[in-house]
Amino acid sequence: MTATPSARAVAQYATTTGNLTARMALHAHGTNPQGWFAWLGERLPLTGDVLEVGAGTGELWRRLERRATGFRLTLTDFSSAMCDRLREVPGARVQRCDATHLPYADGCFDAVIANHMLYHLDDPDAALAEFARVLRPGGRLAVAVNGRDHLAEVDALGPVVDRPDMTAGFHLNGVTAETAPVRVAAHFTDVTVARYPDELAVPAVAPVLAYLASMVGPLTAAQESAARDVVQARIEAEGAFRVRKHTVLISAVRDSR
Ligand SMILES: C[S@@+](CC[C@H](N)C(=O)[O-])C[C@H]1O[C@@H](n2cnc3c(N)ncnc32)[C@H](O)[C@@H]1O
Image 1 (cartoon, helix red, strand yellow):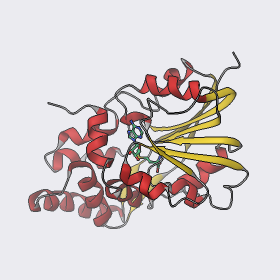
Image 2: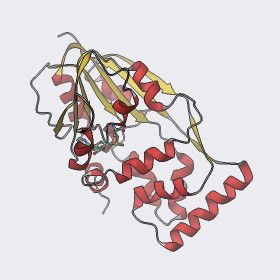
Image 3: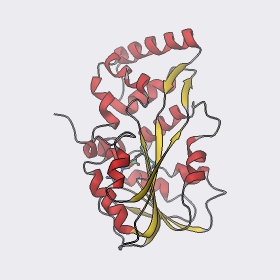
Image 4: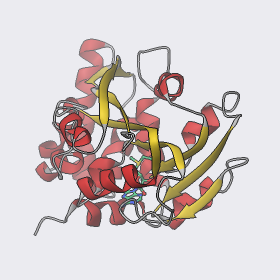
C-alpha cells in the first residue's frame, strides 16, 4: 500500500532533520551564483507579522540574517526535531503545529510563507484555506513548489536502486508548479509565478547517494553500487552529474473582503 503524502512526511521528518539536510546539501551544487534562499529572500514580503509554515531547520532565516529585521517572525513545523532547530533562530517565536490546523486567530499575520512544503500534505487545499484565514485582508502569501521535471535525473535513479516509487515522492498530492497557481487562486487574488533559474552540477557521487538514502532509507550495498556506477559514468563523461531544477515562487494576496 502506498503511504499518503502526510504519512511519508511524518516518516521522513517527524523525528530527524537529517533527511532535509541531506537534500539541502545536494542543492549546494546549484550553478546559479545566487542561492535559492537569497533569491527567495529578495521576493518575500517581510513586514509586520510574518508566519512560515513547515519551516524545517530555519535555514532561510540563517541565510537572511542581515535582512531579517523590522518584522515579527513566527516559525512553525509539525516536527519536534525541526522545532528544536527553529528555536535557535534569533528572535523567532516557534510553535509546533500542523499546517492545516494553525493555532492562530483569524487575520493576525501580514505574510504567510510555505516554502517547499505544500506537496507534503494530504489536503493542500485545507492548508491554503487556513493560510487565507490567518492572513489580514491584503496580506501576502508566498508558496514555493517544484515542477514535474524537477530533479528528473535524480528521480531516474529510483529504478536503478529498485525503488521506482521514489519518483513520486514529491508529487504524491498533485501539487506542482504546473497545478499550484490555480489551487492558490481558489483562495487568493493577484497570483503571480516566478521561476528560480538553476540547475545542479554535482561533481561527486557521495551527495547523490546521500540524497537517495534520504528518500528511500539506508541503501544496501547492491543499491549503492548500482547508483554509483550510473552517477560516476555521468561525471566521467560530462564532468559533473547534471540535474534539472524547476522551482517556482507563487505570490498572492488575501483579498480585502
Ligand atoms: C522540504 S522541507 C522544507 C523546509 C523549509 N521550508 C525549507 O525550505 O528549508 C518540508 C517541511 O515541511 C514540514 N511539514 C510536512 N508536513 C507538514 C504539516 N502537515 N504541517 C507542518 N509542517 C509540515 C516538514 O517537517 C519539513 O520540515
